[in-house]
Length: 184
Image (cartoon, rainbow, N blue to C red; front, side):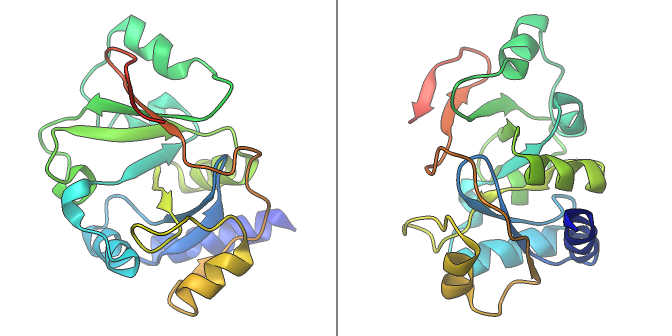
């Protein structure tokens, strides 16, 4: 049954829609990262400035190659390593990476997910998805489909129902080149 929900969510993404789905941390809002109108619509739903940039979620480092500058072997190993808690990596991006993804930065935030639903969405989509917490900017993120519905009412195109990972708080953000923690 979950395969049907994954396909339905990806159909909405392909049509420029915004979806909500469980991740390894909290419920996320997602869309096609190549569709600027979809990303800007997602940010307007959150009341969040595009200047901050967004996180992309994928199921392998390879999925982020269209956006990232080539990584050293050490950096690729650091990013590919599995950690006890989810980690979002900030990495140098290619100069033509859209500003709707990077905001005012020359870097891009990425996370390789272990969550089965989030990973399946990326697998079915064939690449990364935008993944920003399902909340109004500055408010606590949703951790259930009911909370997502209460926050966004009928403004989303699709909600994938499944539990979030055990962490229940946003991922640690680290500099991909140095490993330095930027946010817990």
